Each structure stands twice: as structure tokens, then as C-alpha cells.
Length: 66
Image (cartoon, rainbow, N blue to C red):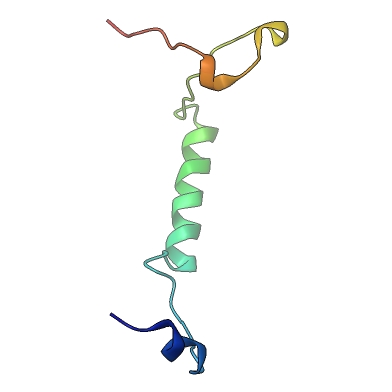
């Protein structure tokens, strides 16, 4: 446990990305997604709802898959 006073009186530098992927990894992943989209292999499930019926998404009920 560290006391707050120790942090307030110390110059502190936090470095790192907490596991965030490198730019090369992100670029490759983005390219793969775009390639799938171009070939029609990317699917995103949507649900059409009339605008008049949209109120508060927290009150929405999702149909169960069976």
C-alpha cells in the first residue's frame, strides 16, 4: 500500500500502452477487416426499428434466439 502523500510529493511518469497493439499490428488488422468487407465477407447484424419507437435503449427487449 502506498500513501497518497508519497505520490503527491514525487515526480511520477507513467509510460507504456497497457498492452495496446503496435501500429504494425493495428494496420494489418485493419487491412484484414477491409479485405473481408471488400469481398462481402463482413457481416454486421442489425435490427430495423422505426424512429418513432426509439425511446430509451435500456428499456428495449431483445428477442431470444431459439
